[in-house]
Length: 109
Image (tube, rainbow, N blue to C red; front, side, top):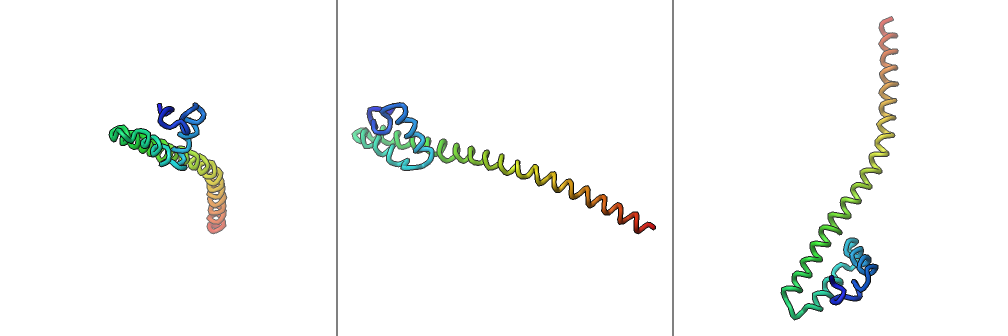
């Protein structure tokens, strides 16, 4: 789509994938749309549409998309840790219940 306007970023499929990866990781994201907008500097509408397209791509893919992926990973790691802690708390409750029963039996005697 942008191979002619920004060949340094979109000449090959591998370059395109890397450029989109750069956008999603917010590494130099402004360079790519700026170079494409400069290519279309004689058409103000296309220049603004390119900037809008890449801004939306950055928001959807880079901010929302990566945040969701990151939250899924963090939630998975936290839930693994919580399972073990929940088991330990359940064992402690059983021990406490057993001890209170023994204390109640001793108090009755």
